[in-house]
Image 1 (cartoon, rainbow, N blue to C red):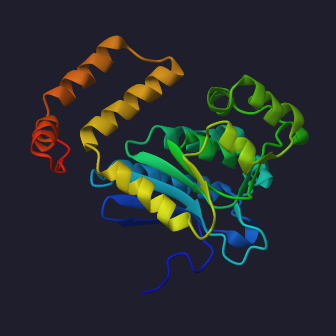
Image 2: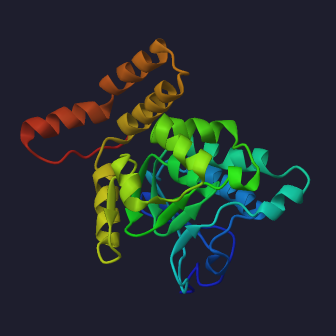
Length: 262
């Protein structure tokens, strides 16, 4: 079988069982995002959202043959010269990623820069590779960052660390990022696949409906755009579900539950 990421291309989607993987696939260009990549990512997100069998999405990068691994060097600034492109076009991508139905994991297997840092933050969970770097050079380029990205930074980094990121353009080490609580795990290359698989396994063992509805509610609460009635309706939906009945039965019988997402 041909390796789907052997040749540099737009982002590549693979799906196995309940897990989808999107791989950024321009390693020779440090996985820089071009305008056609943004269009592809939006289309892949839509495809994933419409596939109820997908429970987890992993976002990662092809770092093959790079001297130092780079997950993504950010948005190709040449794209700002193309009509209808630029920050407003880029902003749609992390926003769509944040709103996806499945649980999203960023497998940050290299350094990350600029707008690509917001793709990492837009994921629900993150694991990181030891020794990689994170840098936000917007002000060094003369750019005020787009609103939803700033909100994610302040929400997840905190005000002071967000100021450091944007007002100094200094890089963050993985140790500094881990101290902010951004990563579920930071590990070596040797432990990478085991660590990622363990996180995926923990997620797919949970009740799909409960995970889906809880993710929606957490996102709404975090953005301040929530309604108590909607949260209560989701609570009622899951409390009456077949999955909750199965979960209680499995607990009483001391066995693993078999959830169906109903």
